[in-house]
Length: 216
Image (tube, rainbow, N blue to C red; front, side, top):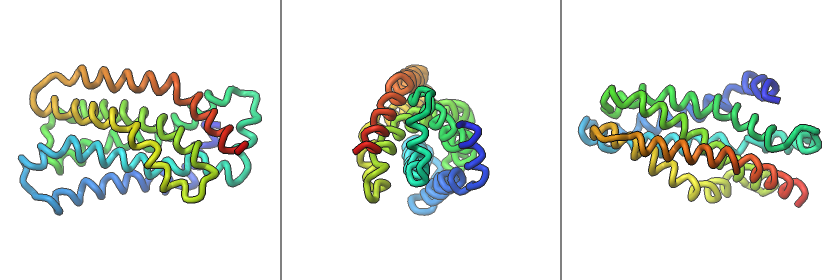
């Protein structure tokens, strides 16, 4: 199934390029719209980068299961002898590899535009890699719940954004600590704990949401 997902992504590059382009455009527009002052941009950078990454992740979530639901392959997925939570975990892993990981790798390049100190780049990538994986797992639950809903892409952010707040707080807190010379390890530890919790609970919650959406 993961090979199939990768093949579909290669045939439809817009599915993973659009969130990256959105992330880059949002960060590019802030220095133009606010101020080119390096000190101001450096202060705002943690929040700007994380909010932009969160919105870019949301942009790619609506199609996580919707295309499969429309062509009927999602029903076959539910009838598969393989454990559904494991299949969902594979789908989310491909989503993270095509969206979350590229966002994390691109972030230092955009950090240059926001006058981030060079010593914070590695921390930024690690924090975004951890946080984007958690965002994808939580977002999969919302994507599964809104499959059968008209204009589900509008409802999806309302469902998942409140659950994204802890990731946003500790992700931006880690970067702020790094910029200020503080200890970012506690923030990264919490991000890791949130990811572990999402890995334990989200696949099963998503599987239940898929069954509810398709049987409802």
